[in-house]
Amino acid sequence: MPEQSIPSLVQAQFDEFPYPNVPIEQTVTDNSALFANSITTARYLRERKVVDPAGKLMLNAGCGSGWETLVLATANPGAHFVGVDISAESIKMAEQRFQFHHIDQARFQVMDITDMTALGEHFDFIACNDVLYLLDDQVAGLKGMRQVLKPDGIIRTNVHSLYQRQFIFHMQDAMELLGVMDEPASKAVPILRELMDALNEGSFVKSHWNGDAIKTTTGILANFLLRSDKGFTVPQVFEMLRQAELEFISMVNWQAWKLERVLNKPVPYAMRHIKKLSQEEQLHFIELIFPNMTRLIDFWCGHPTSSPEPFTQEEWWNGSVQAHPLLLRLNARAAFENAIRDNGPVNINGWSGAEGNISVDPFSVRWLIEVFGQEPVPVQALVAKAMELMDWTQEEAFSQVLANLKFLEERLILLLNSPLR
Image (cartoon, rainbow, N blue to C red; front, top):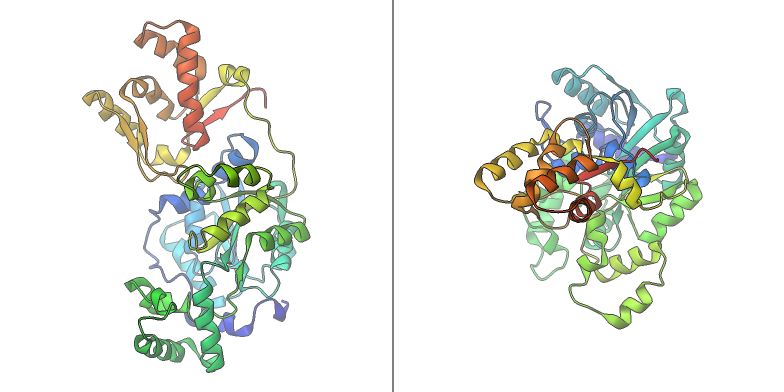
C-alpha cells in the first residue's frame, strides 16, 4: 500500500474515530443522498437510458464506517457491493453495520483507493464521498477508480470547495502552527474547543463555529481538525479529470449550479458573454460569484463518451415513461390518489432534481397517476387518457401531455424509455 497516498495521521484519526459516526442500527432516510448514489439517476443523466440496479456491481471507495455503503445499498436494491478503506477499525464497523441490517451481498476490505486492481473486479458504479480531498494526489485517486470502472460505469465523487471552506482551512493552518494537528484526536478536540470559545465574535473564522453539529467531536474532526484536508476550484477539478482521462458528466446538485438559480434578474451584458463560456468556465464563474453556495464540488464522471441527442418528438410518441424509482419507494402514488379524491394538485417538495417545489395541476394528476406504478406507461396511453378527460384532438392532447412530461423529465421526476436508443 503506497504510504504517501494518505498521511498516517489521517489513518490514525479514522482508526480512533471511524467516520461517519452514525449508529449501526440507523436506517437511511436522506432522499438527496439516495438520489446522488443511485445508478439510475447517474446513467439517465449521461445517456438518457433507464438502468435497473439489480445485479450491478458497486464499489464504495473510502467506505469508512460503512454508512455511505448502506446509503449505496439502499439506493440500489438488488445490486452487489464492495467497500474499501485504509482504516481497519472503520472496516470492522462497516461489517458490523451490514450484519445488523442483514445485507449479505456486500464485502469489505482494507485497501488504498489509489490501487484497487487487487480486487480483481470492475464496477458499474463507484461512490467515493468525502475522500478525494484527503489524498496527497487526487489524480492518482481518480486513476485508481478508473482502473476498476467498467466502460459504461460511473463514478460519483467530490472535493471540498476552496472558496466556501477558506476559513475552515485557516483554522486548520492555525492548529498546524500550534502542533495540535499532530496530537491524537482525543487530545486535539478539547484544545480546539477552548480556542474557538475564546475567539472574538468579530472573526470570520468564528462565524463557522455555529450550530450544535459542528461543535460535536465528529463535527470538529470533520472540519477544523480534519488532517490532510484541501480545497479546490472547478478548473482544478476539470484538470484532474483530464489527467485521469475521465470525463465530467454533471454536478450532483446540478440545479443549484444553474445561472437562473444564482442570478435572480436579467443581466443582458453579462449573459452575452456568459453564453460564450465553456461548461467549465460557466461553472467557475458561478463558484466565483457565489462562493458560499456549497461545501462540496460534488460530481459524476466516467470514461469519455458521446453525449446523447435530445429526445425527438418521435421518441416521445413511441416511448414509455416511468417515475424515478426513488419516488416509487416514497409512495408518491398515494399523493396522486389523495389529490384525485380531493380534486386538488400534487406538490412534490424537496426533490433533489428540482430547485424549489413542483406542483402538478388537478387535471394532469388524473392522467399522470399511472406513471407512478411499477411498470412504464406508453406515452400514447397517457395521450388517450387525456383525450378521455377533455374534449381534445389527439394533436392537442399530445401537445399538452408532452409539455408536462418534458418538464418533469428535465427534473428526473419522470424517465423516458425510448425504443430508438
